Image 1 (tube, rainbow, N blue to C red):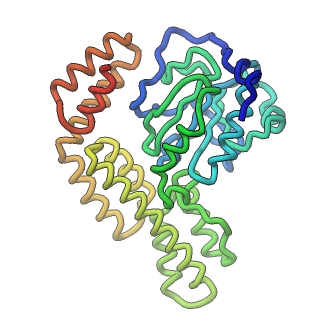
Image 2 (cartoon, rainbow, N blue to C red; image 1 turned 135 degrees about the vertical axis):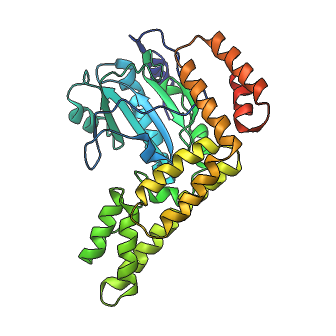
Image 3 (cartoon, helix red, strand yellow; image 1 turned 180 degrees about the horizontal axis):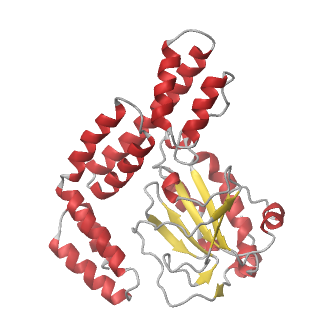
Length: 328
């Protein structure tokens, strides 16, 4: 763990941002300002939706920030300890960070590094760096503060919600420890990793039902992808059962997109979608998320009063309880 001297050093931070408030605990983290990335296969911007099912630690930092450098070994340590249990770390910086490849090599950063326009993110209320946000498996903020302050025990508690299926996906899609030897099966695996799961599963079903060398590998790949799909669907159903209908609908929409092209799964998911959208919990959840968006730049006193009013209007259910917590 960090030495006392290192911890005292990292408690300093650089303040350059405007007067914006950080996200509240319980809020769903907004999209990252991400234009490109390092330590990824495609170098494209980071989409948090790809990390649903995992616990995510976002660290806002820059190469020129002394306290950020002091805190970075702590991020590396946490990642190494929990990466195989479902933790994803995203180091968010901007174009002011120079010589990123050299910095990444020096500090042994194996996690994703995202590059956006502004490291002082208005959407996240980041005024000083380093500043970290710990997100649960559904994308909600569990904790926020100085990057040196996130504790292993907090991550361990959050990781209890990660399912075995969640560990199959590094970017929200099925991944395979070893690529298939058969070229046809390997192509389907690659297509899944890019997000085309439904179409690839349809082709794997044909290969698994046929004869030849591809049959066994296709069956194994199909079994894993079916487990992934089952886990994703179960997570949506659990959210819906717990009253989190709005989040369930959002996750289901993403799942339906990636399962496009499959002849039977699509219609099944469509039935679930209609049930969720017709529920009272979805209507209340939609209102709650609109309220959160409207309050993003409002002072704390206005937020508390608005959440109190919402809780009084909807005293029961998941969103009413969350509003009560945010009103404190």
